[in-house]
Length: 351
Image 1 (tube, rainbow, N blue to C red):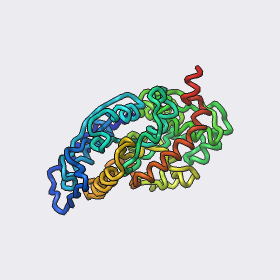
Image 2: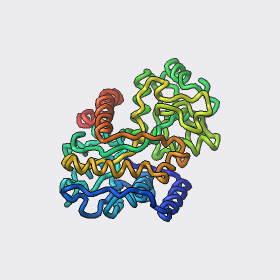
Image 3: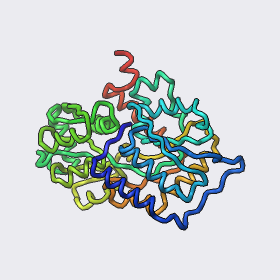
Image 4: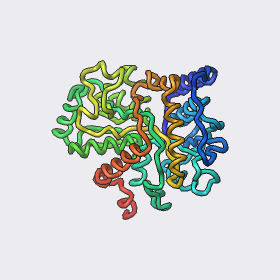
């Protein structure tokens, strides 16, 4: 899935990475190699997007945090592809020398990547399956956030939005980020769950959708953490719901904002950031990568990601098996809702 961040946040993140790179790595413990010699050469972190995107920044932060932990150099390779491209990369890596040994871990944004299996025809063309990939770990979640226009007729509470939407079928204007994006699937899932019918108006970017809501031209959208905070702090929109187990700062200061857990929804819908490898990689190599990357995620500099750099970026530390289990939950939970809204890969095939 493609990610977008504001230029201000890009420069902030790049400046922080430079500071971290210059900082001492004293105290970091070097990971020993395995009995089979792994890793014998540099490990390349694959960012399936452009360098300055959210994923590109994430890759470089992990690269920096692994200094002093990995006994071999850590490189970053930016390999942008179209939507659904993570599965193309999983397939391509079956033929790249060293990939099946664990030398090319790639970024996985789990909710979007998993739901690509249900909506992207190209995944069917290469016979992609969830079991083709094994997660190494996840580190965090950039929450999806429900934005609504100021002075909405239902007020600021999400419960009242649900009641209003059910009482006024087809009246509310929903601006989505594209059709079939992770944000759109999440919002459609919620609308379907509560039986709310709306007028849907797709937009090309998250910011375009947020701007339409901020201008009062639309009623609501589902946004990403980085776009949501800039519009919220500018006073252009209200926030009603944060798709997480708790409401993070600065939204926690507003008693009208609730979490997915408070609403009774699972929190797996969002930009959950982690790392995966092809399923053919030996488990011992995956375990080594987990230990190294988990240690990197616990360094003080990496933890600064969760200290207000992007409000709504919350810790979600999971092992590979835990992440694989959650991915299966996402696949099972989203199958029917995606069919209900007409976006399922089988429905597209019939058309």
